[in-house]
Image 1 (tube, rainbow, N blue to C red):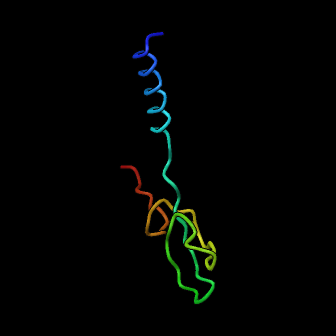
Image 2 (cartoon, one colour):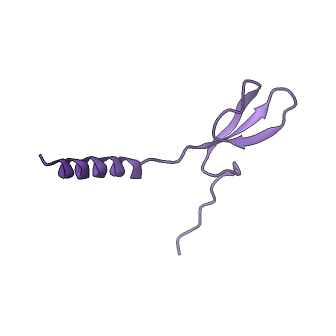
Image 3 (cartoon, helix red, strand yellow):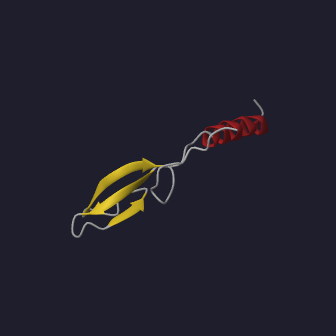
Length: 69
């Protein structure tokens, strides 16, 4: 198989896999120290616990469904 053809097949395969990747979910995290809440995709550290989620946005609000017209 010619090298340029192999490179095209490899690139197409990797591009297709990346196109199907989903974004990471957001969670509401609560501080064990003072109860403060923040919204983040990953844990801010050992002094935090997951309070709610997953959410689709950085505001940690439920997605509003718009009725079809």
